[in-house]
Length: 344
Ligand code: GDD
Ligand code: MG
Image (cartoon, rainbow, N blue to C red; front, side, top):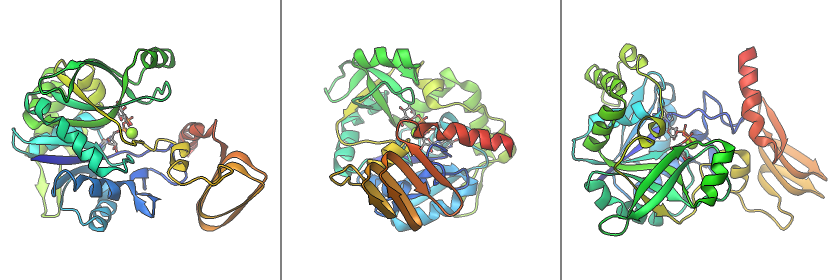
């Protein structure tokens, strides 16, 4: 049996003004009025009827809401502060039995084919039982600098998973271009691993993180609804992603290619692609009205928005902020938001 662990600590600003620190992307209703977190809970039911979440204290009510909407059986672990994915994963591994298989999954991805997903996870079981950290690989479509890259090697015994020759996290543009031509896969950000294997890898590559996490778990507080980590102890933990802390350094890493649709919904362009385009390439969420428009995306959740003669535009209206961008520049929104935050 596999225990899914949903990592839910992100606070992306790439989908501003819908996604904010107080209300990050995974909680925003983006697909058929469901949030990506609710859809993740629903998808995990194809893997197990029980899940763990590791999430931020300040988001506990959004978490419970999504779990209830998905009718998921969830145990929530709350972090007083975010320390990135290496600590979050260590914490989960410390709460289960050493031989338990954990499936770490981001809360904010869109993977519509739950059955194909569950079948692909099953393909990683043998390699994970044998002591590998199993990753899932996506065929890349452009030289993104926002992803990890995986060099797929020879098949492991059983033939369903492959050795990983190299793992490169978030390369610069030139390296990404080279890795793309060299047939690397994108890291989907999903990991299947035995709890004790992950803990041993952390002991080897990031012993300070493991030590802080053990102390934070030893001083936890369980009120029946939530497990809370000790604030002082966990706040002192180093902040690092699992990709830099472990994946780039570890030997026993395997990959199972995933061929279904996968999106990390990392930009407004990716959100737009979640809704159906009409014959002019226009996509509308909510009360958008277009005339003579082409390739225009409108998200209008609470009042009418009219766009005339627009082309290649992204328009997002919310009660207190508006975004207007061309698709080419829309990813820069996070830089402007960072600038606004510095000024406030
Ligand atoms: N609990 C918790 N605490 N979760 C966290 C924290 C934290 O401090 N920080 C991030 N997470 C969650 C996010 O909510 C997300 O669901 C997941 O962990 C991954 O974190 P991201 O910050 O979104 O990572 P990334 O997108 O930059 O990179 C990762 O995912 C890519 C695929 O989308 C890496 O694994 C890349 O190698 C990979 O290609
Ligand atoms: Mg991400």
